[in-house]
Image 1 (cartoon, rainbow, N blue to C red):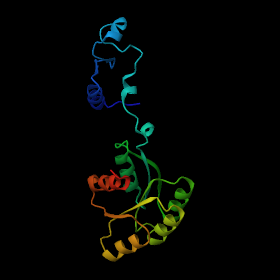
Image 2: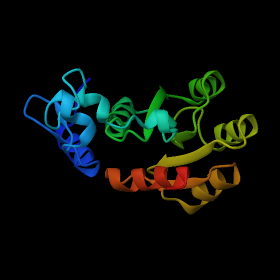
Image 3: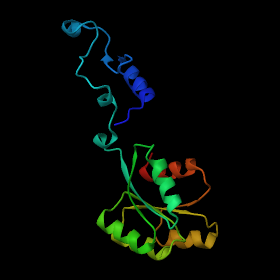
Image 4: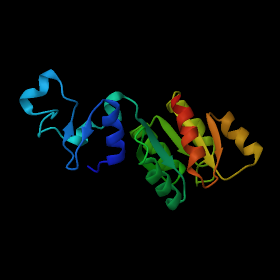
Length: 179
């Protein structure tokens, strides 16, 4: 497991702890720690274990990315890997594989492209009937208001235009989770 040392230092500092160069975690000296040496939690303490694991706190939302462009699916999946509150559980390139994935392993959030083969309102309607509480985020390059309204009428919760920037997508995903 790769450790983000900057994040680790911030987290440890928040709890009044510190880590030395080797990753051993130290606490401020207290009456209970005198036996182990001044301030040491102990050599067996793993610094990486100090990082909060969001799945154990129930904060991770699962995401299925459905788009016909493999480079876009890969870019979204790679970008979301940097946000522990989201876990990409699959990708699909057309309407049929999207519906199969939704049936086999339902995500919390579906990112759906309008223009992929077999996509559009029929997929949104089918997903909505299968999983009424699943959040459907349409992520499309089509700015036509009629297409947007058709997708929202079919059961989509949000319609977001592809801008090439990650910020609006993360913001929309956060809205989907109520953050």
